[in-house]
Image 1 (tube, rainbow, N blue to C red):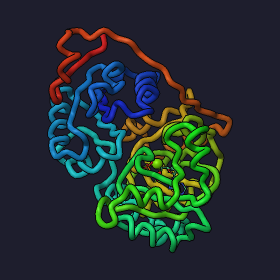
Image 2 (cartoon, rainbow, N blue to C red; image 1 turned 180 degrees about the vertical axis):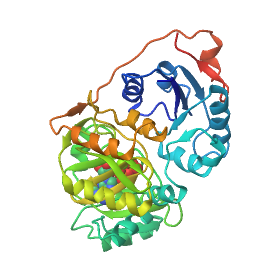
Image 3 (spheres, helix red, strand yellow; image 1 turned 90 degrees about the vertical axis):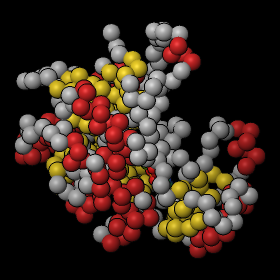
Length: 362
Ligand SMILES: Nc1ncnc2c1ncn2[C@@H]1O[C@H](COP(=O)(O)OP(=O)(O)O)[C@@H](O)[C@H]1O
Ligand SMILES: [Mg+2]
């Protein structure tokens, strides 16, 4: 089997080390990995065969930078990891010619990345989403919070466009602020409405989504879709949150979750990787990209997605591998670290120039 080169974007994302390991230890071929990231400190710089600093995914220069790398490095497959990279790659997809970009159509990404649009779609499908209001400014936030039951019930809000729990806060009238201050870790998410109103402008500012606070266990369905069909699905819990990231996962054998995923994937026409997130029975987020994977020695989802894109495995063969998902499987994330010496002292003063390779592993 011929060796291939995969470009992994946002190679500072939390799942990168495990993803690179999985792509390489596929048991059948050599995979060379080129990483990109907007930060020169991304872990991809240490772990990829080549690493490039590129503009942020929302910068118009991002797509040209990625295209340039694709041509220079002879990339077979582009695997985006960040929500912010998806739209530019989807819109620029034809420009990649023979290179496979593992991304959904632009409309699917627009809807999924806009939480108000995503929740409206879930309601149309008859799926449970939190009740929501889209507002700007503190005054409208207060009205929406009250409509959704505050102060009798806690509610929550976040920017309409965000990721990684950035900007997410719970509004809870009964929160014990003194206890939070003295006893809890920084980054606690619960605040009182009045505290928030002191921080936001009365009018204007970013669009905010004010939501019913869903309760219950967090779960996700991950998998590979082709042309709006879930070919291989994997359901799991999402636990032990630290700094907005889940650190522990238990595989689930849950037919209902796979059904929910299939309806959403079909409606949006999702292609390749997806991650659908629930709190209790409420769907709270649709991510048309790869997320944390629970790997098994006999089930390597990212590599299978790559093979599917290359036309090396049929939809039927891929679907049959779904039977290998083991509900006994667990994943625990933990902190690790790497050390290195900068090759030239200049590197410590100047950030690597935009999309020039700044480091290679020996
Ligand atoms: N309506 C909601 N009810 C309860 N928890 C929520 C709600 N919306 C978001 N969350 C919590 O906030 C986290 C981040 O929100 P999410 O919608 O996944 O956005 P993102 O991952 O893009 O930051 C979720 O993992 C969940 O813990
Ligand atoms: Mg999320």
